Image (cartoon, rainbow, N blue to C red):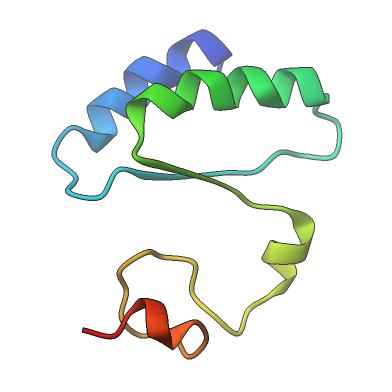
Length: 80
């Protein structure tokens, strides 16, 4: 998707979400400058922007959702 179309599409998708969380990752061929352009366009539309690194993608033992309540790791963040 072209960078210029990301913010309007994201605004449309997140309009009715209580948690405006966006996960951003990039392919190996994307430059740091291109990646930052995407983050700059996403940031105003979201409450939380989480950058997913290869190390995070390799972890399959815990959830990265802010309110799933099912995480086995980081349990103290989800206790009610």
